[in-house]
Image 1 (cartoon, rainbow over the protein chains, first blue to last red):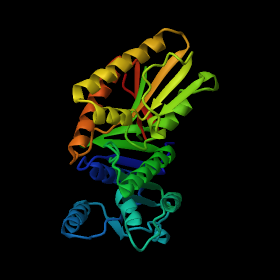
Image 2 (tube, chains in turn yellow, cyan):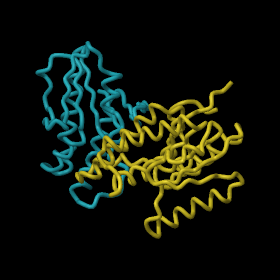
Image 3 (cartoon, one colour):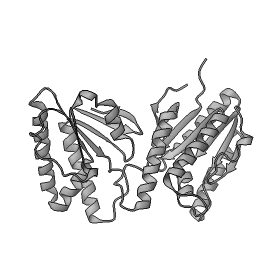
Image 4 (cartoon, one colour):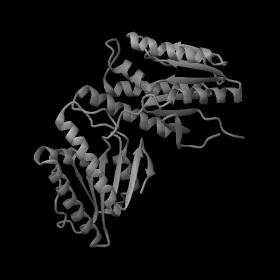
Length: 188
Length: 145
């Protein structure tokens, strides 16, 4: 029997189609196993543009025939764990926003090592509870590293998180212009 | 020569250490991140593996001191010397690690634009002279040459 992946990592550039691919992947898995779909939205509607982006994503999920349960949580992604089970497929979109919310929020601890551990721990605990956790992130590390200390910290932390996730994950995809490239693992 | 590239903080150094370096490598690790200068001549090193890390930083240094075409000439002179060093003895390897800086938005400052342009050209020159090239993506290698 095929193993169901417990973690899938998906990344890509801006507007590469990574979110659509992630949603499609989650839906396919849910159809196969009869699991429920959960969506953890980390985006905070801070301004008009962000509100519009969030609306677009919400509309897309409403239009899909399959029912998504959405949980909005900017930082503490395992907060709603009691609602998840081994019959849950969770889509987390996206890691870069989550890291933003951790690093640039006055309410939270922003020591890099602490943030790194906190995010990895929460991802681990989510992954252990559900059937499959799908994580979406961004490709932002292929430009000259700026001298700005905050940007440097952000990039270093994101790179470390990506490396750990790719190491842990069953499948890793890089999405280029809507085309998913399998970087690690095997397709079902 | 072996060129290892990929985005920042993608695990390039860890991959080189894990995959290419053994106890018998007789390793000389020269890193721009440690503030060391770009080596010109390697002939004082008898044999073994030389890793030149952070080449984008050395290219930046070139661009602050020389006009663009001269940067590229100086870079190519070095590539030829390193390649000769490597090929003149059986037990010699040169590994160059350079961060890919080519996929962001156009930098605001002229010096940064020049740095990015020259880095791209220098990487192309290096790639054409390399025997092997690996792109590291969060610890996973993709061999492209």
